[in-house]
Length: 313
Image (tube, rainbow, N blue to C red; front, top):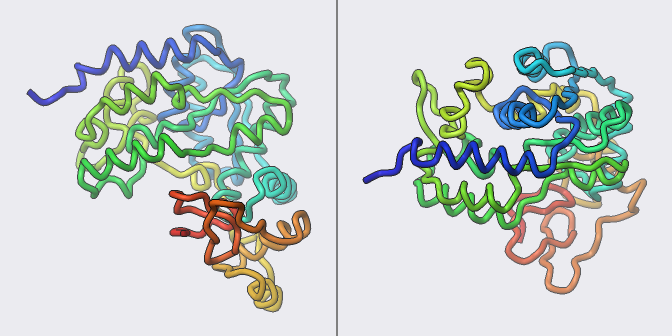
C-alpha cells in the first residue's frame, strides 16, 4: 500500500514542534513563505517571538505575506526597508565573511545580513530561520520534472553537504542562529517521506513541500500556505540590486583578464573581493581547481563557493 500524508502528519508536527521547543528563539526572520510561517506558528506554542522582515522596495512580496502571518499569529512585527547604501555595506561584509563573489549568494544574503543586523539592534538574542525546508521537502521547481529516484538522491546528497550563510553571518555579529529544519531528527523524518508526498498539484499548479502545505493548512492562512515559492532575492526585492551593482565596460574587460566573469554584476562583487583578499585562494591539497576563478573546490562538490561557477571540477 502506498504511503499517505496521514502516515506522516502526526510525526511531522510533533518532531518539528519538539525541535523548535528544545531551542526556542526569541526572534524569527519571517519572510511570509511556508517554512518560516510554519516555524513562527510552532514557536508560538512556547513564546511569542519578535518577527523580523526586511525588504528592498515596497512591492517586495515578502512584506505582504509576512504582515499576514504576523497579524494572524499576533506577533510583534518589525519590518525594515533597506537602501542601496545599506545593501552595499552588507555586500562588503558578506564578501569578507564568506570569502565569495558569487552574485546569487550575495544577492540572497544581503537581505539576510540586513535582517540579522536589524534583529541584533532589537535586542534579539537568538533568531530562527527556515534554512533547509526547501532542500528536504523538494521546494525548488527544477526538481518537479525529475524522476522520484533522482529527487530522492538530490535531497540525500544536499542534506549531507549543504551550507547556509545565516550561521556564519549571525556569528559574525554575535547573534545565535537556530535552524530547526537542519536538525538530525527532522532530516531523518524527511528522508523517510516519499517524493510523491513532497511534490503535488493544487488547483492546477504544481507545488513542492506538498506534505508541509497539507499538514499545516489548518494552522495558517490559506494564501500563505499555497504561496508559490519565491527565492529570497525575489521575495525581498534584492534582485533589483543587480541593476545597480555594476561596473562599466572598461572595468569589466580588465577584471575579466583575472578570472572568468559572467556579467557586470559579477565583476562588481569581484572588484570588492579583490580589495579585501587581493586574489582568489589557490586549491588546497585534495581540492580541484575551479575552471573560472582558479579557487579550490572540494572533491565531490560541483559548485565553486568562491565565484559561483557550476559545474566545477
